[in-house]
Every structure is written in C-alpha cells, then in structure tokens.
Image (cartoon, rainbow, N blue to C red; front, top):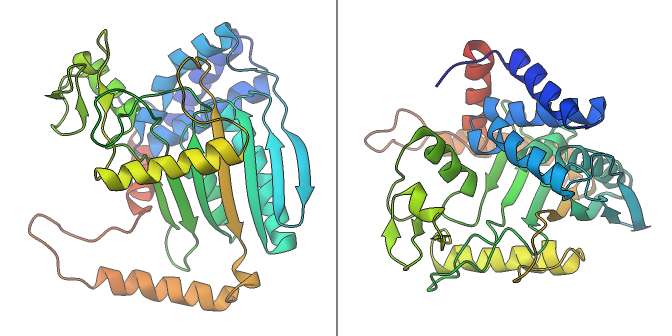
Length: 322
C-alpha cells in the first residue's frame, strides 16, 4: 500500500468532500477526523469511508448542513439532536458541550440522537481525557446498520455497537478503549476486501451459518454475519448498547426495515475533582499503569501496552513516515 503524507491526504479528502457540496469547514473537519483514524492505525475508520460518506450525502442520509441542538438540559443531563449532520462534526461539538457541563456539574450524562456516522469513537474519548475527564460511551446505529448475529444465531440482528472509554494519566497517553462488541469492526473486512486479503477464522459466518475467512462471502448475496466478541459476553454488551444508545436516547434499537445509517450515542463524563479528587485519581492511574507493566511477559511479547498506547504509537510512526 502507498504511504501518503497526512497533510496531503487531508487536503485531498477535503477537496473530495467540497466537490460533494459539503461546506468547507465541515469538509475539512471530516477529512481531518478520517485521516486521524488512519494515523491512529484504524484504517477501517479512515479515508476508506469517503466513498460511502459521499454516497450517503447524495442519498440524503447525511445532512452536510446539520446543526447540533440542545433538546433538553438539566443538572448532569444533556439531551442533544444532531440533525443527521456529519458525525465527525456533531460528535466533536457534542463532546465540547458535554465537557463544559461535566466541568460545571461534576458529571454529565450526554445523550445524542440523529447523528451521522460518528466514525472512530475513540477520538471523542481522547477529547474528554485531554480535558481531564473520565468518560465511557455506548453507541448504536439508530436501528440500521445490522451486521452482527446474536450469540447462537447466524443471521444479522445487531449493529457492531461499539463501547469506548478513556481516562487521563499523568505520564503518557490516556488509558483509552474503543472496541466493537462484534469480533471485528466491519470496516476491517472492507479493508481486507479492498486489498484482496482473507480474514482469520472465527470472525464471521457466511449466509449458511458456516465459519468463513472470505470477505466476498461476508458481502455476498445473501450476506454473512459478524459474530459477537467473546460469544455470549459480547452479545450481552451489544444488547446494552441498544438499551442505552438506542432506546434511552430516542434513536431507536436495531430492527428490520431501517435503511438510513446514523448513530445513537450515550456518554458518561465524570470530573475526577467531583469524586475522589483529581490528585488521587491521577496518582492511582499512574501507579496502576506502572504496576500492570511490571508483569513478566509471555513468549512472543516484547512489552505490555496499555489500552490507548497502540494508537499513540501508530500516530507517532505514521505521522513521521506516512
């Protein structure tokens, strides 16, 4: 695969979006977010998404001029509507409001519905952590984007339904998790397909419910289905994503007949100062990180990486090398 300078790639992506009638500021913000995903090592949520984002815009699924509005606000609760605007823009602005409220109230339950595809959720977790907050979030796809079979099933019934969270630590990048509740993000199969690669076994089944390693079988007609991560455990977590991000936000849960891909999102933002205290939390997380890294290594490992460190390392390497 070619290595491209991140700035050149961002400029190129911006031009594509501008040619698709996105306002310049929106085009730039979406392009920057996608390239940041590539820099962070998550090509599944990077510029490979441009093609479908342009298609969704033409189809009217995404509103290039969508504005974030406050539906209701009360102590520690913020209910937002994204007007189906680009998730990279809506999500960042929603987190800005949530961060401000968490700083004022000590905590914020942030509820967002009608957001365009949010992309790499970890970006918003890093945003919260950089503001000194601890954050945990659940996401669904507004009833559509059904890709995953329930535990024991072989037909698509759920979205990839990611879980994400982050906490700042005194030395190093934040502790940061961004995972789908399926065995793998669908975008990674998309990347493998574009490269002509096969996938490891155990990630998805074909339309007959048989284990498959072929992206073409996954995207066949009829299609295959992703499996929930860790079997019944991932299935349970996915169902809770539907509860919080689908039902509680008003976005709606996974169901048949919903075509428009969008996101429901619920985040819990906590200010350490309002709980155990910033100094205590920072000290404990710093000590925890050091303690975890003292473990003896298994064969084949040269170090222990905390959640969030692989992304930070990829960002440093790819920013330098393309």
